[in-house]
Length: 247
Image 1 (cartoon, helix red, strand yellow):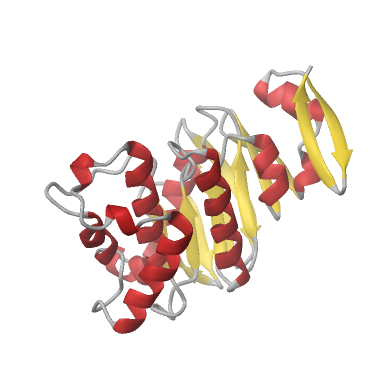
Image 2 (cartoon, one colour; image 1 turned 180 degrees about the vertical axis):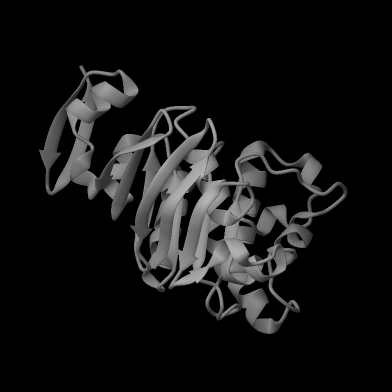
């Protein structure tokens, strides 16, 4: 259980309090500037904030970055890629400890989903933004993969779908659900409210730095979308799925 206790970043987000459950995928929804990135960075210990973040009762804000790296992985929105690296070298940076046989097997498993084989030997500078993003997602997942890092507990991702085509967006969300099913607390920001409703176990909706709604996908109502996103939509429900369509 990841607990936020009055987490506040001045003029950006908060105070926000709430519990992010292990074994569930929580998706942060909200327009640009609503505080999603700031909340994720503060939770990860990468942005100075007031309040506390606790993991199963232990204050994470008291840990240094080396200790934090054992427990949580964070995909930031704008990553600065090391110059001169190739795809497989970037993935290796996400592995806790040596690149073992188990690590290679996990890399191969992720590659099958994210289609990374053709990217391994290429310089990062020669890859498209979407190709780089797929490698960064895999690197982040490797850092807290339970098979490689038994201490890994939390997975935080800021707009992981940015730059991805539809196929890889869906694959990424399925991978995040898989990692949540392994017992991790998985939290990601997302702009597509219909994908949020389809894949999120829990939804946190932010608006102007405040947490204005939280719960299951049913919290994404036409009334909330009109208030937060300033878009009029109608709700369609079929086969247990909710779809919000612009009017």
